[in-house]
Image (cartoon, rainbow, N blue to C red):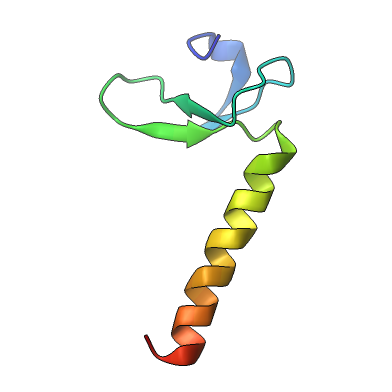
Length: 60
């Protein structure tokens, strides 16, 4: 499913029918990306941003 170019919006993967949160990138060996059609992707992004902001606030 993740190889279909119609599911990609530039560098972002967006497929409502794909239940996966993390999908491999188009080019093998380049890692993973998030399925931005899945609402949990935004939860992950907000949580990571919150952790980074907290570390900066605490001076860690």
